[in-house]
Length: 325
Image (cartoon, rainbow, N blue to C red; front, side, top):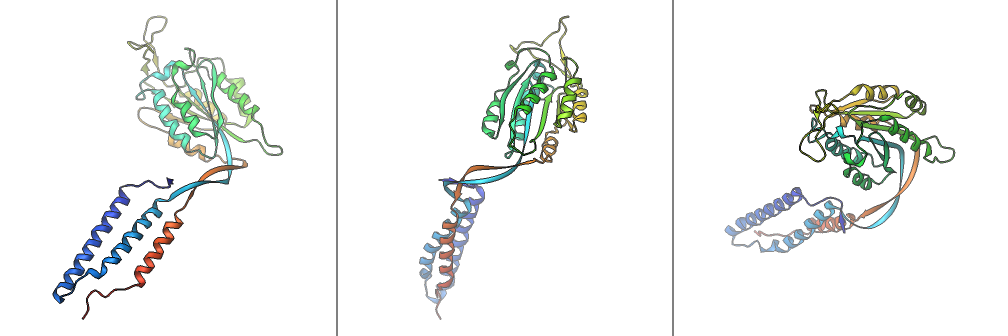
């Protein structure tokens, strides 16, 4: 058996309050009956009755659920591809504890907000790879997200072009129901914006014609930070022997977002605009209505509630004279 709501301090406080008030009621009845030479034992059986229906009300409130039923759910879904930069610069600690670790935490929250939509995960540096295809399975996507490390891709600079081309290829290969318009698709590019690849112009033109919206999330600070070595003990150095300082470069991401009718956001040491990104994605309405069958635990709260109300009515109807003239 499962419960729709957990047993918390609020329910415990309610039970304790019921017990205290009822004990007070019994003591008050006995105190009033004593000067008249009478006893309040007549209310004893009502105590048992009330000790039955109060727990039943509490059980109904918690929502006992057992058994599973299949229910159709209609959704107007959209596809969201998460493109996450795994270049070495994402290990920079100017956004604590590091750019990548902070991104993973925020994306975990974002994924939980889109239960009716398909989400996919692409990782990239100089090359791009599909880490998780489009799926409704949030648990699987969360698992892939937790495994992200900069050593998953070959150590090289960032190139946005392969990631965008891979996303466009996946969008083009997604099967569409006959006679229905294409699914609404959004790309979320999470990167520090340092792009060392070739020009983006050809890819940007294809992206604009496709109607896909791109949302950029710039991660880092303008002051930048040194990049720790993967093995620890020092920082990365360039060919001249100087320590490499990685800085947020918002220009490219902002331009991509503007030309695809998307938006640009930032995650820095001073502000976190991931909630704004979630709101922007929520405002995108899916065009294709789908019917999905989901397994739902059957909430059986009605049975304890009905029994509790019956006992409560019995308690009200049956009156007892405790103090007789």
